[in-house]
Image 1 (cartoon, rainbow, N blue to C red):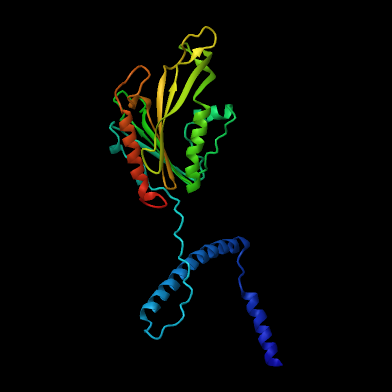
Image 2 (image 1 turned 135 degrees about the horizontal axis):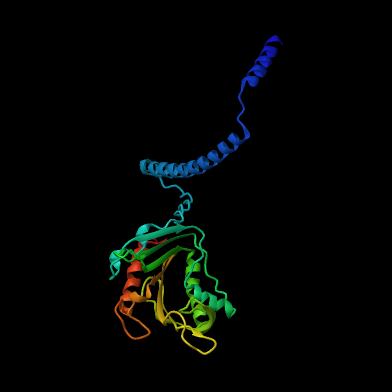
Length: 300
């Protein structure tokens, strides 16, 4: 009985000397333990599989025995990050470029043409454009000049990683917008030469200039914007008419949207000018698809 009391007294004394961590420290340890548990679980599975493979090689041959059910293969991890190599490089363009600006994101909505999407909303066509798991973007600028003028873009590009089914669905949503917005009149306020706002109207037209020229799915969008005209009197106001082209290419679960600057494309409202022709743009789409291939869910 005295030995039991001595043990109990010693236990109480030891417990009094224990330093209990603060609640914040306990929560931090729990988070670290959860992460370690997840990593160790993965490592344990790999070790067990490796051990099973070694045991199978070293097992001596003998009489045939019933075959045990084969375990299902471990599925490959879902790819999220988009490497820089998935983007076009300055060497892929016929135009000399300067600085390269870039950014990455998570959970970004896919953007094809904000103005086209605005037209769709006005006409009750709300396109279900996907939200990406990850994205990477870049803008290639012209070389800086001695005059110190701000460098203007040569090309902008976004790459999105989205669910495969959503990637296929995306091109159907683009067609819905094109069907609804083949022609659209935008009413807005435009600054005149004297910097005074003028109520104007501007005609916009969109069309698919080419399809399925690269990757798993692709489309070349052509957007023609007229010069704004004053709602009263009809006089021209603001920027001249322009044509903008947009390349949309999908490879697996990756979708890229490439927008060359209007003055780098030969297709002009006032006639053919210097720059990339339509065959050049389609070839650029093919190059963009090749860049995506190694980073797609199923590399090609």
